[in-house]
Length: 195
Image 1 (cartoon, rainbow, N blue to C red):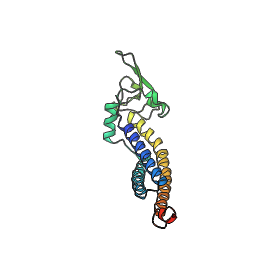
Image 2 (cartoon, rainbow, N blue to C red):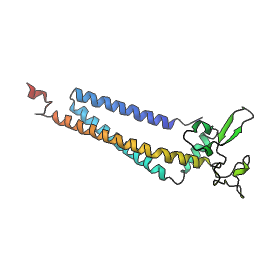
Image 3 (cartoon, one colour):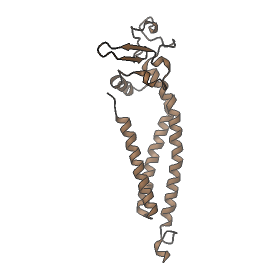
Image 4 (cartoon, helix red, strand yellow):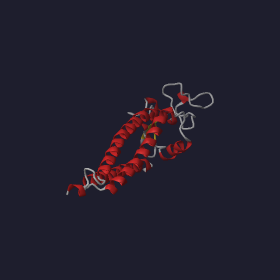
């Protein structure tokens, strides 16, 4: 099983953004001043949330450890996952070892060490003297290390994309404000002055 919360959150933000865009287009075409104000406020809200997300994504590469809540989620929800499916995102040490489950016959690729940085006795080449994972060896890695590497690689591009779209949204707000100003008495879109 997996947690659908991140996907549901992204879909919700996408649907909200589409609805906000439709309101903006409708209010600009029909020259509805009140609707333009609502559009401006909604885009400012999206802008604030997106800026926060961009800043959070930019700080991910500097993450020195995985927060405990994230660690617990991975341990509970994704314990039996085949890391080979993510070979494009993780280094080879994250899926270098494998275990075959006798009951199902399924083979799962995974890191050679556990979340708590102890080694798996099935892979003694990664065990230190006290049972700890010897991460100095290229094949030995913990799931936490794999997740940190993934997050550090994905954080910067996400931050850049988020901050670039902020520029577009600032232009959208600017144009909406111009249209709103021109709908006032004496403006270009003032219907009473066109008679």
